Image (cartoon, rainbow, N blue to C red; front, top):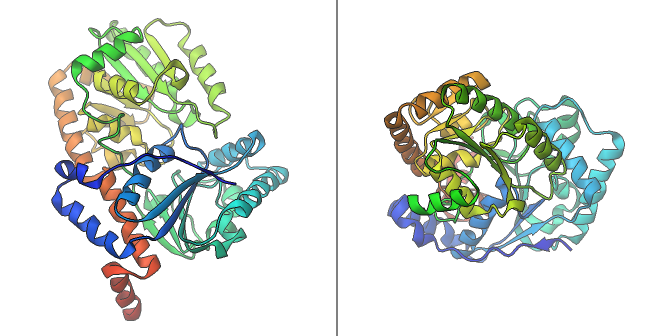
Length: 425
């Protein structure tokens, strides 16, 4: 049986003072005709990545507005997650495709999970490639299906996307972060819906400077010296080795600078420990580089503290589906420098609310600009926080899902508008 995830509770009205009454009222209006609709979210893991972080807020808010929602995670052994990590990398452009035997493993676990999925759902929302085969295997178990892609499919390995396409092309609705991620050949309705962060979650709630400094001090960070920080998985696409290279260039000009690389190890990422160890080796024992993860007692509050205390937050990805950590940093008013890839430019207006770079050298130069000019850093951070407030907070994300559910299930004003548009076409 698929494993249910306990998510706690959240109340939509708690967000009113942040996003405004108008958006909250729109969400309530959309939710009214959806009362009691049964929605299943299916994903690979309950911790250690952006999908899980999103669902820990989105699911309880969907419940709060009256939907009957469950989040379930796949059953899978190491062989399955080894294959899906390889698939993830190939879909983001890595040259190695899966072998026929590896595709058979992926198919086998999709069949196992499809058999265990209960029926009677109004909407089954499938997250990412790991469970993407469910619709083709058990279409009768839900009235409607949505495939939500959280990764960058702009330049996929051609063999991998061709093999996956028969499983994803018939989803009635699909969601992508950006238009450029949408592969050719999909038959259903394609939606471009960037994700969002929860401003009231422990990772993003307001933390006093004293509390942030106290937490950082517990990990040996000198809070009286400048700090660079990247929060991400230990993954080659996040380029922590390039961040260390940039830090070393900064340190030549500013010897007092420190670097924190903070990540979480996920159950569906068997490569994580290998790349963590490679990152430790690249740091080469530098006492001013702090490499931390959830096995060092680093949780949401600690990540909040590291970001809040940082003089500059970095996300030097070479590929990035969206990059929730970008909005997290900007929401805390921190100056930001990141890779000019994927969903990062959606969140950062270059030169206005942060800087976009493509090499360690440019990353180092922009970090130095900020570290040497605190007023510049404050201005960037202030503009970045307002940009996130308008575009990348969870209530907006909830509204977008409710619009899609309304159209799928044929209820509410948005469904009527869709019918009028179809008739006109």
